[in-house]
Length: 437
Image (tube, rainbow, N blue to C red; front, side, top):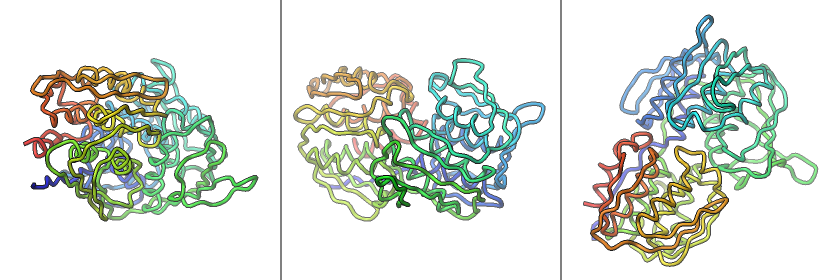
């Protein structure tokens, strides 16, 4: 049987970070392979509003940096419209606070309900003045920036790792050394922090990471950290200047996950290329989870091939790869036996309440889904093939892409807003037709 070959789109998380690093550098950089999507359009627009020059198209951009000095307005604020991009919002707010002048940050849709108070609390402690004209601790917000001071701060990763990533990206612009201690009761999405640290290192501003062993702090390679432990992880950030250069964005493991699952669920093997085996992206966990479910697969340095396989339910902690939850939930509904997904309570504050949205859509497809305090329990039970299921996207790109998997089992999938995939993967359905055609 012929193998379907798909090239993974550019990584959304890496695209955001490399564009920000280039925009904060002095001189001109070239960033290629950038994801073209609504979220990245918002990041480029915000960086331009802070003084960076960004020219290009088709994923190839020349970026003239602000030399470590994001510029706000004097009499009128620079307007930073983040749209519905939570990543843009959290990273850009920290960068703006490290600049000079007045900024306003606004969005639309659920963005005005997505919390950011944990980050702004830390930024205010470092000298930024921040006001919320609407809902407390949620966008929109107004920032009066005069640079960040040096010091020691604490931040939690209980809701999102993007608070820490934003603070790390802004840290080289501070007036002096900055020590960041991770606190709280749990830490989610650690691999995204590793992606941030990799981008910073590659752009000339490495951060020293230390973990606590007994009573002593020990310098630790971020690649060796598999789980962030609150109270036992800190970052030593020194003032520095991002270096210009030529950088290329790697492929996106989360957006590849739908096609990897399709290889197991469909009638033909699927090979996804442009996936680095050594990537810092946490969604490389897709290979392990599919393997645990029984999928037959092969992997080399830059591709994964998944073969049609009978799958079984699993119990899995997905706190470090939350973007994979919709894919695994849909896949689990077509496996044998129950699947339990844990440690993902923070999915309630994504583009939708993803736990509730997944339960709704899986029920529409004939499965049984129970929302738990920190996750989901899924019991398979498909509707008869050839039936049409109308799925609710909740304007959430990952809901549309994951529910498309049911089409591989003879279900005709209909979506109330298929265009929502433009947030991260505008050409998803064009690529998907290669799998279903």
